[in-house]
Length: 134
Image 1 (spheres, rainbow, N blue to C red):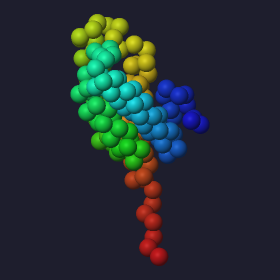
Image 2 (image 1 turned 90 degrees about the vertical axis):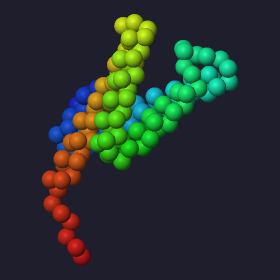
Image 3 (image 1 turned 30 degrees about the vertical axis):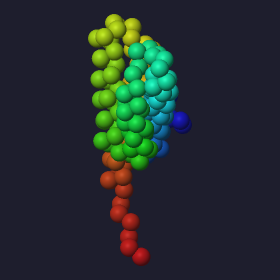
Image 4 (image 1 turned 60 degrees about the vertical axis):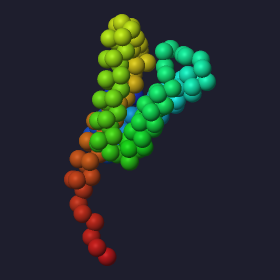
């Protein structure tokens, strides 16, 4: 990332918006991968951290969200932030205040930046002059 910090990219130009989207996309890919791994372990009969095989649905959702963020979808970015936030709130209710952890907060910031980035990207795209027909 060429501007701002890794946790709060500068969105003053389209490259900064793309960087913020890329950060959120990688957060979604990592969440989808780890969730899928734990769900497959649960599917094989070994429950790990209380994850059930139904978490595969969650992994697929985050995979779709990652693809949507890669395509600069505002809906996917908002859905990723909302889904991850709801899961962290649920974890805190079920397991206590330390359930989210530092990594959870970092991913939440990543999804927040994906929202910021997709909205900024579309703002810059709408401000571009239209391409002439040739």
